[in-house]
Image (cartoon, rainbow, N blue to C red):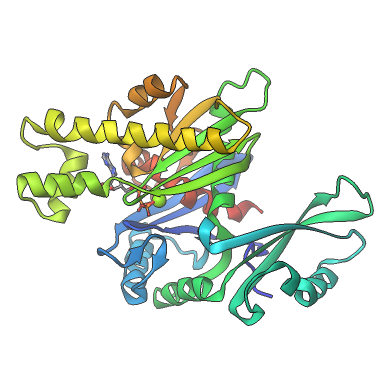
Length: 354
Ligand SMILES: Nc1ncnc2c1ncn2[C@@H]1O[C@H](COP(=O)(O)OP(=O)(O)OP(=O)(O)O)[C@@H](O)[C@H]1O
Ligand SMILES: [Mg+2]
């Protein structure tokens, strides 16, 4: 049975293959404090990854090579993630007396009851969650399955870079793990928190609502910072690379702020507000305690205040590294600039602590 969750015993690199870049992060833990051992990001060529699917395995492999060498890590074992829409999860109950191997056998026999795909096309894994609420002799087991091709293509890309997939995780679980680093930064007043994490990336915006640290809702929309990059290209006649750099480093004409950036900020705020409205409409909630902005686009100045005002909800930018030590191999200012876009990489790298 292939490890979708994976069982592990030593250090792994968290590697997030997203649509605009490959992000690599290595964490260690000493005396309860987490330390960033290595970190690098490398841009991907256009269309190598489309809406979270790897479409050009060679190109992704080459970028993986570059990102590993740039980070100067010695670790070869990797944790990667498959994304929400590619994964089916199901909570089942099993006899609590079974050992892991017996469970594996039984799941292999019964999996066709739970999974609507031919079994030779899916990768399956399971994780015991704990005793069942209704029957103390049983345990709740979370089954996760995704199409094998999603796993295989990640393994193939890693292989090009002489890396190996030790763990294939699910993005939503990686995000939960990274959120455990954000939650202590929030004022809960002793209550269970309901927190909306809005990840505005290059092409996708994902709303994840976590109630008491567990994912209660997720929804993806096609919207992201690429729209701003393209507008900069179009208006100022720049290449994709030039526009991407100008976004981060400035140096654009005077009318950029009022004519381009402000309308884009407003569009982001609209997206966040609308995503929350969808969530309220689809759930028993009518408010969240916090909005946490993540993804590279969250770094745009002034966005937090605008989201806070529009949603009437305290808003902050995700920084999973707030309490971490930073090793000598790591460019600390680059890490701090990129922090909001490293939630998934961080949650994956935390698999070293299992
Ligand atoms: N300081 C910054 N100011 C404005 N935009 C930024 C900044 N830093 C990064 N970005 C933008 O953030 C986007 C990349 O974010 P991120 O790395 O979260 O995307 P991604 O995960 O690759 O994309 P997706 O989630 O859509 O697959 C790019 O559009 C980039 O231009
Ligand atoms: Mg992303």
